[in-house]
Length: 221
Image 1 (cartoon, one colour):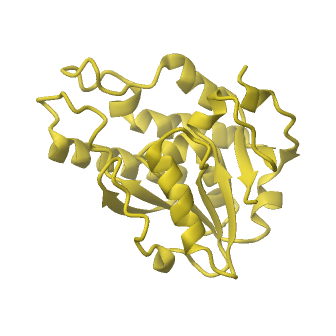
Image 2 (cartoon, one colour):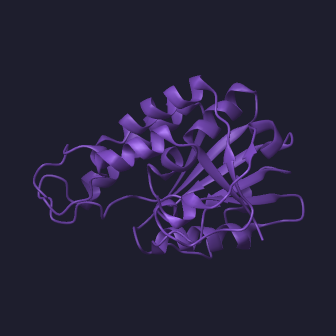
């Protein structure tokens, strides 16, 4: 078990987290919304909470050596996967389409965030430049009426710890929906794109981890 996961983390319910606020999840890539907080999104929607997902990048660099899926085709595929996943979870999708590893942190996402929302962004402790950029983007978009928190993806497997981390209780229905949503991201979870051995495919054990372990929310400092 990583140092991050070994740290004590109290449990929290979805109503305790949301406090009646709309929910906006900012995902660095198509699939981070499901990996990091798919069950939360489903439970929020089921509770009648206005819930949206902002996908920042287009996912076009996950398979740079593929001839069958050059960047334009891969972007189209990953957007379709993202649309299917967010539909499975019940959320509204906003697609920004920034290039992978080239997030424009000055982009104004304020108009996409409703009054009084909880903004949930990737954690700056995730060891990926796009995840770090999205954390900074969320901080820059913060208004007095908004609340901010973070969710770890890759940081779950490291030793950096976070103050204010909580494990989130999810319903059985939400966990099942999360599994269905993750399956929508077939280009990242399977060998759907077979002509790039160096392309990204999440290991089976990591996929199992995200489906079997509770989601984690980190309070903004």
